[in-house]
Amino acid sequence: AEPRLVSVRATRITPRLSLLVLRDITEHERVEQMRRDFVANTSHELKTPVGAVSLLAEAIESAADDPDQVRIFTARLSAEAARLGLLSSRIMDLSRLQSADQLISQRTVAVDEVVVSALEAHAIQADAAGVDVVRGGQRGLHVQGDPQVLSEAVGNLVANAIVYSPKGASVGVGVKEVEGAVEIAVTDRGIGIPEADQERVFERFYRTDQARSRRTGGTGLGLSIVKHAVQRHGGDVRVWSQPGQGSTFTIRLPISGPPEELTPGGRKER
Ligand code: ADP
Image (cartoon, rainbow, N blue to C red; front, side, top):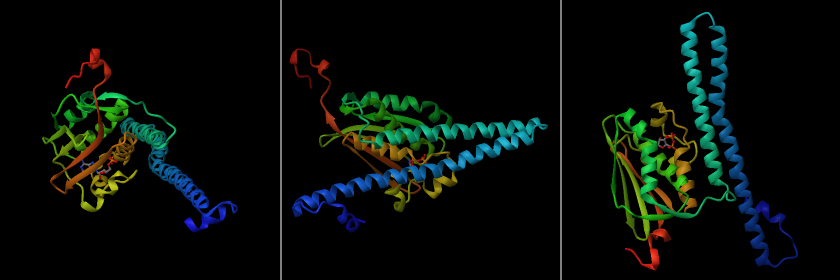
């Protein structure tokens, strides 16, 4: 697409300057294209549950004389409505994280608190799935950023680890300091991810065939949210996985010192 854009640039500028203009236009085009893609595949993903809701409403109307049928359709209608709710809140989270002008807060955040709140948010889910979530590793580490965004990111990894694990399995959440970074690793012994899918699982709405067939009710947006959340904090997220053996997702974030209040009178605490 780049050569097409050459015609857009002003003619009376030096070759160096015209190159700058060209690059700027290309970046603008790229962002616009991303926005168009996002809207297109979001609308596509919304079509299925919206269609289901209207079909179920019709079904309820025509089954009005049969209370048992009405009850079944109503339950399915609530499930579809809940799914739409989840989908729309995730779409909003993702679009907020993707837009550069939406600032996220920058304060000193205790990694322990991020992990604890992520685990608390998924305690009921873990219980219901019969999965034991075990927390380990180093304590007392800090990063800079937005605690809510970070705990949602870790929470999404924990939620996936639970969903894709068999009943009775355990999931580990570990924290350690590595090369000036804090690493948060979420490990499961679940279904794993085929190698060909490992890069793609971070794309929005991407789900492996296996995940689709398991009817886990996912949105395909969780990992995309994790990726954008972590990137906005100057970090990255990676996956290691063996199909049938399990997966480890690691988030790395630049490490920060403890908050000021913890060092009264300028005394350095180590
Ligand atoms: P979903 O809502 O479908 O879980 P995600 O974006 O969170 O969406 O994940 C994308 C896909 O990556 C999932 O559909 C699944 O195929 C795969 N995946 C993510 N986490 C795991 C995991 N811990 N084990 C196996 N597969 C996973």
